[in-house]
Image 1 (cartoon, rainbow, N blue to C red):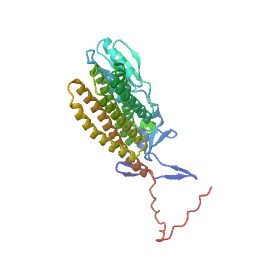
Image 2: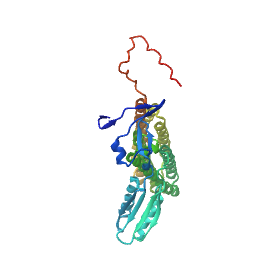
Image 3: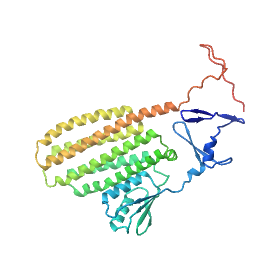
Image 4: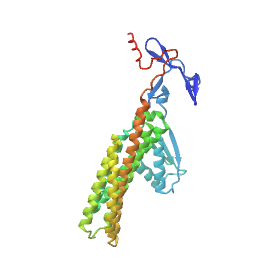
Length: 374
């Protein structure tokens, strides 16, 4: 046995004609109650390593977490606390109160279950409610979730600008309600990545590396913030009811919105394609939009009253959307470099010459290796 920097080493041995074996540490086998004939499972990792598990570890019993709350708890605080429990990733979540659970508390818990991906109410009693995560270990692919978030965010901003231009309160309210869909997807991404960082088995199930988890979490948070600005634009619709806004300024804001969304589309593609050239182009165009925004802001500030405030809100949110697109482009640049380094690390290193083997003379190629028999 060899030890180095806290790792135990084992020499690879060959048995028969083509089988390689490695011995397991005796202490590890005994601590897990294993013995001769038991099965262990290997999970190949993208970095070229292998993770070893006892077979029983793949059928764990559901983890139950009990949370005690008070009936008089603030509704927002209770909901936020349940979201934190959800992101932590318990299989079974039991919410209990010291006395009979009030109808308002049950309403918040039911609303939480309806808004999240996975939790379902499994049991109810006079003093508790139990929620079970029905998604379990079969998560949706995170790249697909992020693409869905992007399409939802894009549609929200388009509708928000439509509501602003037409003064349509119904469309504005619809945009605000759809923000829940983006939030629930973002919380789902957070939960899956939290589980992956805690358990290598979940990481293997997702088929991601740790740097990819960090990248996708950044992308998810950025998209969620863009959705918040779409909601902010839609909320301006009520402020401009009955107001006369110059057509030129409205058209200019619509043009800026299209430019910002084009930047967002290019930026999200750079993340998945690792296109550094397009990422730099997004960054350059984003700076141009910011410069143009300053000119338009001076024209808006020449007005007075609530219309000027409303126009400034819309302009600021469009600028933030473009800047968030630039953030995604920077994430794509960092991700592209990380992928190159990871791929380089996976290439096998040149094997050192065996002890006692003759070295090839300088400038003379080594003799060809004989073909393997059989």
